[in-house]
Amino acid sequence: MALFMIGVGAGCSKPQGAGLAGDPASIGDPAMGKALIEKLGCGSCHVIPGILNAYGMVGPPLEHMARRQYIAGMLRNTPENMVNWLRYPQKVVPGNAMPDLGISDDDAHQIAAYLATLQ
Ligand code: HEC
Image (cartoon, rainbow, N blue to C red):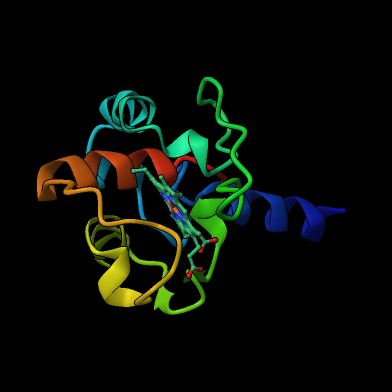
């Protein structure tokens, strides 16, 4: 029992929200990211937890994005790689169904911060 308690304690000492994708607050502002995701209409292609009307079935669901190992099966799931993917999906996987949406570096950081909250 004592060992079990130690195990649980160690698990909880991880900073909250810091998954493979990084600590959301150190990437950007998740609340701004959420607003951008709604404005840009990402939900027309993706199921995204916490986003209004995000039921799209074109791309993969973005739930658990904070804990995924890879982005689009190509890039390690780091904050820098997520920003790069969001800005230039056609450069990463030419011809895939996600268009380059002309997202600025700043906006991509806010969006990546929101995705990093999706445990
Ligand atoms: C026209 C449809 C479309 C739109 C709009 C779109 N996506 Fe995608 N998205 C896709 C497709 C298709 C893939 C899969 C690409 C691949 O794996 O090659 C994808 C992949 C992704 C991935 C990687 C998912 C994974 O499981 O690895 C993320 C993250 C993502 N999109 C976020 C966004 C965000 C945020 C927006 C809005 C700024 C957005 N997408 C807009 C179609 C779209």
